[in-house]
View 1 (tube, helix red, strand yellow):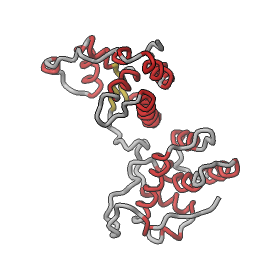
View 2 (tube, one colour):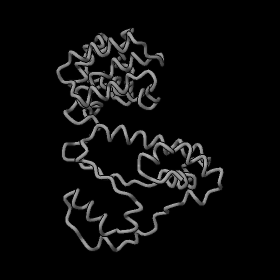
View 3 (cartoon, helix red, strand yellow):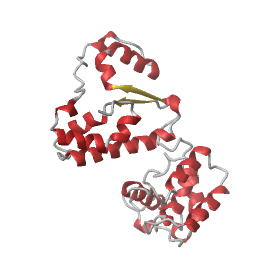
View 4 (cartoon, helix red, strand yellow):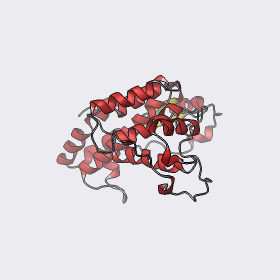
Length: 256
């Protein structure tokens, strides 16, 4: 494994005076410290057993690595599941931008740079959320989401491309969800909101610690578009069902 450290001169979006907002402050210290190692390990698109061993050895000595940090890094060290381009280049951008906050960053080893990034990082959960944040995840049948996406000007009209797009979004959400304590996430179904708005809205306001107002029921929430995917041609239905099958099962919807 080589040890190339991105130079501060290659940072993007920086004015060069160190005034740019901290690019790793939303990360946990453990995740931030792992970025330089992950960046180099995956630079050639392949991850060897020796590289995996080296990353684990280096990070095992860091006292700030929490169980959640270790689980996240281990997921990124799976040769069978390489990080997608968005994730990898997100690491690259974070390291480059952080370099503007670090004197002589180009001369640092990976270990030293990891320590520096950990020092810059906040004490959050790695998902960029403040401790008091609560998330409400509105779930909808993934096939209906794909069917709606196909009608949007910004969305792909091809069923397979739409299914891949929706699947990718759900995969990204799963990564965020894995970093946030379960008690800070409320998951509700759009179909349930349409069937019983009062019950679901009360569940949401209670979870968020908000006062209830009857005006919340003034809007018509009955039109959820449930089963929209079944109005597509049979071939398109089959594609959505096949590509999105893992997500359909994961969210408890009927497979057919």
